[in-house]
Length: 372
Image (cartoon, rainbow, N blue to C red; front, side, top):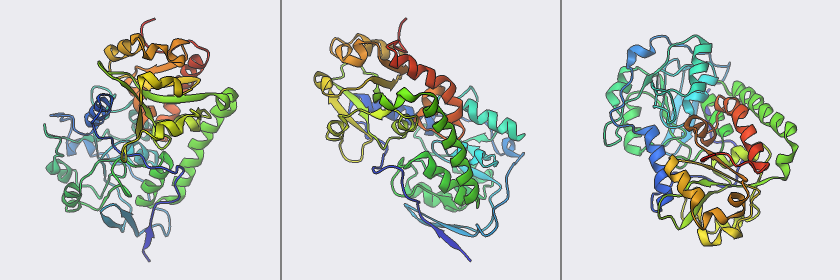
């Protein structure tokens, strides 16, 4: 019997989507995302890099399964052994199930070969071979011939910007699971684990992974009770000439990560939400009106030292209370920014050890990031 799987209830009431680049600050976000998906001319590895396949068996009765997504339905009849992932985070989740993908995108903030430190550590622990890095041309087009050569049993792209044209081409190679509704619209890291678990025929294992990871987050809350009384706004450093500060909204994965650690969104989030255009995952508040956004700390990630210096010295931005009093945290480490921007069962424990002390420093008024 074939089971049909739809998305399970969301842990968030809104959906985050890939932003359009119509504001200066948004362009930087888009650039970082493109760096993950379309690193021009980055060719690292091929099918030979994926010879040492490590996979796990499906649970009894879990397959066949039909996955519903934005482009229709995909039926998976047997436990996939050779998995290609497209987009953010999915490669981490697949590895968390004990299956090493045969092909993955290059990771923004990764090492010289394109792998994040937490993904590399997991592959090494599993005793497998690092997967091939997928190739994209200058226009950001995927090398479909390379994907074909990797001989995947399934292609997973539940958190990606996959187009329908790309989806149709990929389905000619192997069953392909796209995102549930909109590109870049994962409801949570938990929902991503569920989608991957169902696709691999391991729904019970998915529940175990979620419970274990949630336990790590709950432990942080217990060890840091003051987080529950700390409000935050999460944004991005300013670019030259900026007149607005971008503030991410509650459905954004990086914001969810902070709330799962116990911190509270700014009480002025309704004001931020009122500035959101379309399906964007951020609002934009005039620098002249930042005092209407109270927050005990401001957390942001920086595209460059130049932008960080510009923000901290901006005559208006530096007067905002979290900045003026040193209650800020600017993520300058690309791996740490990636680990918290797209949290997964692999990146969360990796990030906690470094990120939590930084949060405490920001709460204490010892600003993190920028010139000492």
